[in-house]
Length: 264
Image 1 (cartoon, rainbow, N blue to C red):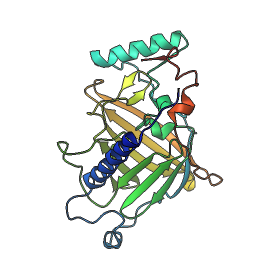
Image 2: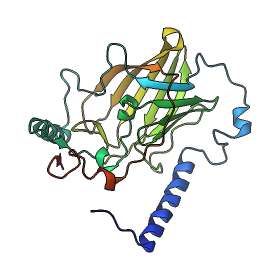
Image 3: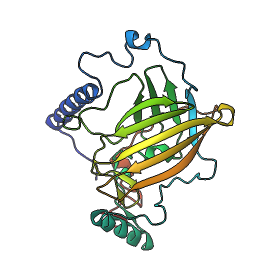
Image 4: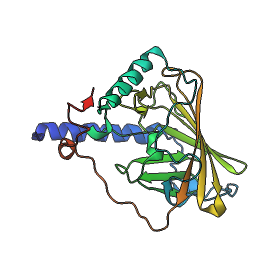
């Protein structure tokens, strides 16, 4: 059944989005500091970075080209997260999916946005790297202008989190925090809480045609210790980003979204 929107409900949605957009734009910018695209900020002298990520990139290649973030051996979940994990494995055995929130148009978020089959466009500036995934046209920004993470007591959390990057030798190190803790999954049945933190170390290899990304994830509300993977990306010069929208009314007939197959 399609959704019916009244003028009042549409106005409420628009107003909420305007408020949210205002809050999100303010959360990553210290009061009085220039934005990442401010000419004065872009013009500041900075050391030359070891590489430029500008281009189109696609996940895959190397030792681990899996689209999953599967748990490592000995991985121990918290009791609360274990309930979700067990339910997901049970659903798989029954030929179903567990909590397919993405099929219901919830953002997939980090880290899964970095392992989809859709390409990502990266635009690198001196102050920030802008990543646009073709998957739901999700935007991720890595700030390089020296700002620090927003105070957790006032930050507006998001599915892709707040990413602050710095250059260390031949690597770009990205520290991402401040995630939402609902409808957000690291992998099937493994929830991401608001305590999730992701460290990425990105190196350019293969004469600039590939990226090696080392991930270190911690989330004391969902599992014990650190969770690590290494993924690879390859440059694709014959691709561009297309507009991709997620519309619940169009997805409702997908088998993995229907209530009988989408275990909640």
